[in-house]
Image 1: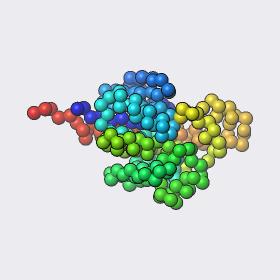
Image 2: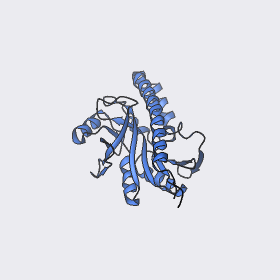
Image 3: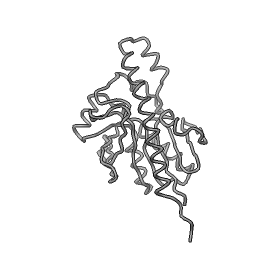
Image 4: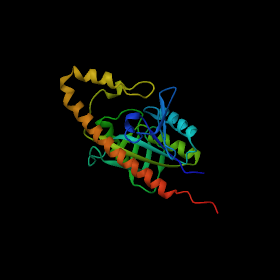
Length: 232
């Protein structure tokens, strides 16, 4: 069977640069699947439940042999800067305490049920030595384990450990989307938040550039490592 990794992201904007030219299929429930013949990328929104929907869609689209949790994350370690890449050797579910290991890497990524602010990032660093926090990796790791698939996580830092823009969670929808227009309108009438909103946008763009490069490296590595050999 041809080796086919599936990358699971929360929002299409996280992978839009990577999947240019790929085939796209939009499914009910705000689920989007991209394919190019050798890999799958699926997005269904933020959070564990939405990540599970993305995994289900990816596995229906191709014979998936590995799951990768990809996207942006918040830094818990103050040494990390916007655009830095985190490759998790340990993924921890902050709600259940479950731990998922990948011996190839060393950094710790913690999955939280909500967008983490500065105080929560600090707690996760002190409790788990977390490099970063996201909302989906533990759910993807759990599903990879249950299906006997390889798993790893690749995240780009979009907000540093000391960065906080209050109220971001209120713009998350029930189906795991982010209301960008509502957030922009909210910020527009609050001049005190302009500088932070501009910094968040700039750092997010930096993270997405780094993420695209990192994911292209991962796909190239996967193709080389799992090169199909002729049958004897």
